Image (cartoon, one colour):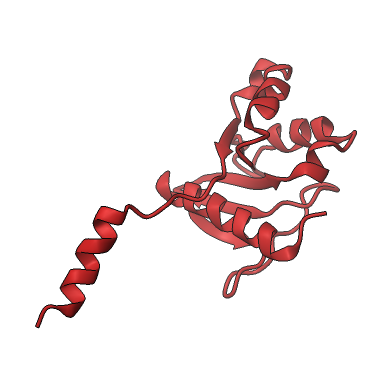
Length: 144
């Protein structure tokens, strides 16, 4: 069972991936200022984001969620969503840990081609700050 702090960290890493692609988060779980996203169908999502008039749904998956029986049904349902009025596709951003990345990639390849086009898979691993850059900042602080 994953604790709340790990889930929050995974969601934060997925939000960073959204930001790198230019998306603005509309709602997210564990957000300080943003509201919690509503359920999509019967499924809970972690992030809803927008880039111009294109929307995306973010979902982080851990060990327990990957071993559920209905996970492929959930991914298929969320990846086939369209917007209400303009009927545009809604992208599904999936964030998984580095140890489950290959397994998830294989599972996604078994889906229909039209559904696969709407899925982006991200490897959620923390990046280390380079010590070279860290030492540069420390020397600037102590120089008078």
